[in-house]
Image: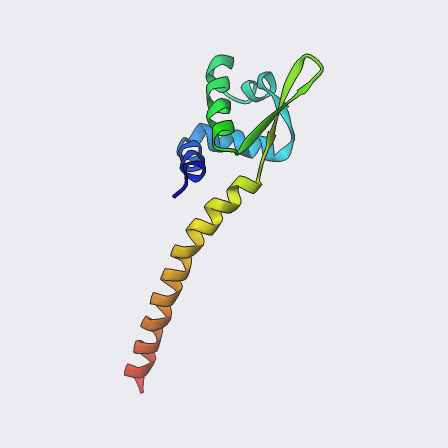
Length: 106
């Protein structure tokens, strides 16, 4: 697993960061706007946003005096690709089980 996807999984491991991503999926937000959605300090939200940025899930863009956070959904594709392997694994197992059951019913 590359370092990038490891950082992405690290970022996704925390429920607050996953909630931040849900908010950012609706619109781009400043740190203050994100912080207003949670019962925690702006500094704590900033730490979460830094980890999300390290995981390539969020990018930050200057807009006047503010820094706007944007969801980078493309980073989620690497996670989806990784989990797809296991989905295919279970689909193959379940198909084999179904074949055995059908064969036994005959």
